[in-house]
Image 1 (cartoon, rainbow, N blue to C red):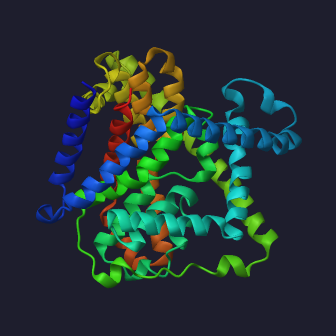
Image 2 (cartoon, one colour):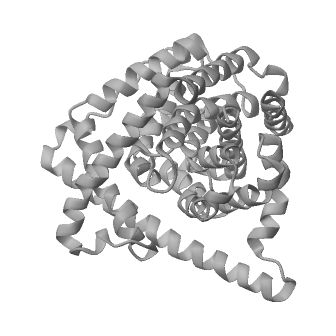
Image 3 (cartoon, rainbow, N blue to C red):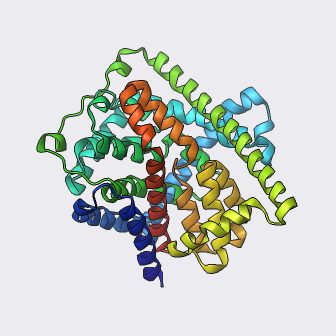
Length: 397
């Protein structure tokens, strides 16, 4: 049955992608097949082998250790509040560590460790999948740097991109997550699903773009040399570090504000619908999304819960959705838990449309206008990428 639901999930993804495809006759089936095979290999190694499980366990333990280190700075500023239990300190225990992780990312970026990893991983991905140097580089970098910083790494190329290539890089940005928030995710869902989803999302975004937005590159475009932004290295180290720390703090504050607003809004809608229709708003969303959850392989008894979380993630953000997963984790089957956990590890939601559009517009107003016009198609593509990642992970449970 596992392979049956893999087929149904893939059929759903391809059908929806094919319906909105800009060029159905030139879908790159070969490239898509290679990348999907890579997904199966990566997910098998990560979730179904002793070495892979130990590797993911080590990564999870490392991020847990980083969270403990972050607690030192948080305790100094906020006293003993961080060691208390409960939702009242979610901001301190889950969001504030983003500041420390962001500082580490800044250091690794400054000493050129991250640029080296991104460059050669992107080069290898391009050689294997043939999606283009820029597209492959960006897909890898967005899984580490996050938004909006990742767009600055290709700011010289953005004004020159046609609409189709612009779609691909924006879809990659919406399908990925930032390394700065991985540790915070691991406080909410198992680290093995977070890490696996990060790997798979890189390929999922390119696969969906290959269906929704196929195009041919010239030989020059396929191997174009990317010139990294040297501005970072021209700035003093402590200035760069300070900027990353402030960026991390601003990100934590932004996420907190979004959580307050969205959770309150969902609570308001739930209570209003319950009073008027005697059924909650999230339950209605669960029924709407349950067929998608079923085709992804979620067991029948869990499809309403999972469908509701899928819809919540789309309308709000991944933190709200992960919080909902925590509430029902003990009632979900292992397969449903794996699928919905992997699904939530991405930035694909309505609020990110504004971030992506604003980021591109700050570099090129003309390109920003193009992104705004295709924003809903971008969200659909990024959501399909999340569905693909969840479907692949579900194969092993």
